[in-house]
Every structure is written in C-alpha cells, then in structure tokens.
Length: 281
Image (cartoon, rainbow, N blue to C red; front, side, top):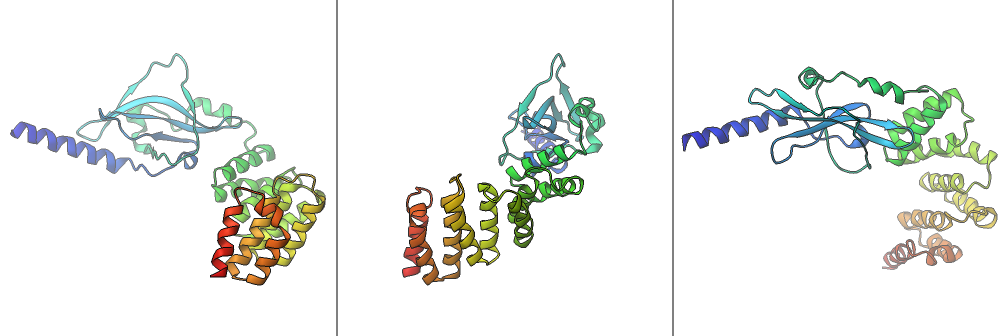
C-alpha cells in the first residue's frame, strides 16, 4: 500500500513539474518560429517540433520527436531517426501548445533555430514578403501582428498593390476606423469600382458614425460596381448601425431602399427581421 501511495505521489509531482515548466496557452498563430510542445498523451509522452510559416502553405509544424519528463523535471528526448522531414500543415484553430523554454534546448538536443529555417527566410525584408505575412495574419484575425508587417511594407512601397486595403482591414479590425477611412479614400481614387475596397470603406464609415457618407457610397456601389459580391453585406452594415443607434426612422428608410439586397440574402434576412422586430417593441 505504501509503495502504491509513493508511486502516486511521484506521478503527481512529475505532472506538476511538467505543468510548471510548460504553459499550454499559445495558439498556432502565436507560435511562428518557435519550438512548441503538445499536451502529453496517456503515457506521459510529449510530441514537439518547430512551427514556422511557409509563404505558400502557411503555418507548418516540423515534427522533431517526443520526450518524457523524469522525477527531476528533466526532459528526456526520444528523437526519431531523420531519414526525411515530417511536416504538417496547420489550420488556425483553438488548439493550444506550449513554448519550450530555451533552458530546455540542451536537454532536447535542439538548436535555437533549425538550420533549415534559413531556406524560408528568403526576401525577409522585402515588401512582397511583408505584405504576404500581413495578409496571412489578418486572415487569422491576428490584426495587430499583421499591422506590424504591413506598416513596414508601407514604408518601403506605399503603392504596392493591395497594401492600402489590407492596412485598412487591420485598422478596422483594431477599431481604428478613422485611419481606415483615410487610407481607403486614397485607395478608392485609384480603383473607384473595386468591390472589396468599397466594402471596407463602407464598413469603416458606418463604424465611424458617418452613416450618410456610407449610404451615398453604398448607392454608388449598387449602381456602378460590376462585382455584386458584397452588396448585401454593405446594406446590412448600414442597417445595423441604425439599429444600434435605435434610429427607427432611418432604419426603416434604409430597409425599404435596400430591401432586395437584405431580404434576398439568406444570411442577412433573419438578422434584419430580428432587428426590425426588436425596434418595434
């Protein structure tokens, strides 16, 4: 009985030791160029490797091996024989990993950065790469990090295709709406009928409280833009702004004017109907 109790205590201590060293609180999108470890399996074994970004494939995990933690808190690696690399494309999700502390690199027999990483750093400071990284991080809703890349790209070449609207996406995401409006007004002079640029500007204007400007721009888009992809979304963003303000008169007026775009869309129709119902109560 005493032996069993002692074993249970030791297992508990090992687990606490590993947990205190490894904090599983990082998402994949927060782990670029880091050695990471996944939670242990039923045998107490931890899989680990290196997360980096492939310009074409996106987030990628290079599997290094596994390790266990002994009673002293030492990481004991079980490294695989490297006849070839094992890379896994990662989907941005809520899976949490832990960063491996640099103090444990020697125990795991790993360098600070893998030697092969340099192959993925070509053109690291170029406007093309900075834009691409900003675009990816915006897509992963890591807008603050995206903005860092995009603002660096802007200093190199503010005219780079797509850069202004991507910056605006970051600003809108971070609720810096006036900055979004300012940069989109420059972008729209160059491409006045670009549907996506207009969408971002309409959104920024509504959030900035410039609803008349948003309406006027939306009418122009309805009439002149050949790409109708965002018409329903544009109409809804304005309607929602009036709903939030409890401006029943303008809500009803816009609902009537943009009715075909709102009621003809299965995504926005029930939302518009619910807002109308609530305002009538």
